[in-house]
Length: 388
Image (cartoon, rainbow, N blue to C red; front, side):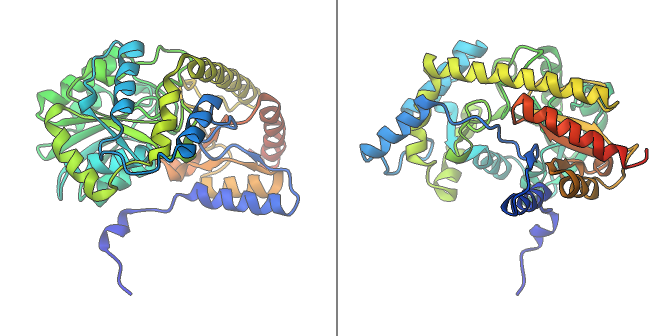
């Protein structure tokens, strides 16, 4: 059989193999601490669950408009107005099956064969893959402490070419957890606009911030395309629901694409998500954010005792990006040994970085402080055997 050549640019997401191995260990009775997958141990908030159950009980399972329930688009617009001081016309919001659906629409609209796309390295791998499958050439720009692990305006100016079409940001980012502040985001938007390009901002972890106030490109760069999700801050991973904010001129072609690619996002999920914006749900979500902040601090303190703390603490999301070069230059082997020997599952950096991933790992602080403490003890034993 012969497959499409576009698959050549799509690498496996290796963390899923580690998750499978971890689950196999658990099936044999091992105690595994899961710090690999980006999914905290919180349940979907009760108001969202109740709204979803009510939608099913009332038989609300038929197609919605391709762009989503009008009431949900209004609710998302209100969320931007209340929390980010941004006026976003509900007509500019396209509800999608997860943020992946939004990324798919954006990639198909914005780039074609031969266009160049700028993004930070490391980055979430699917961001690269969606653009590659659309035919784009990727310029993955290595970032580090000097740019706050972000693609800043200076890097955009340095790496922009005549055939660059799009710059993509992620704030907070996966895997580093670092954010752009308002001045930095505005500067990037201006650098891109001055070159006639488009800006796509991944705000999937928006709301999960600990040191900086959360912000949105919708308030600072109204012409940007903005991807968001109900998975992370709102705790609805398996409900598969996200959205895309687009300039007014892009709404019709995006809706046309949505009609043909997925018809509409899941209907019960959309009704459930209406409850995510209630004051009752907001209180739950903010309590969870504060708990994630405590977990971050506990993990960073433990890593500091091991001499492994990052020089820049993550400001958002729920990840720590660690340099393990003193112990290994094969992050996948390092993670597999740690799992096999100590029952701690973390993610190899090669999932996220085109360059440097072989000596980095990502740790997700998605379990409680006590389990993080146990994981740190196991990690300490493991590192002691590595002879660094």
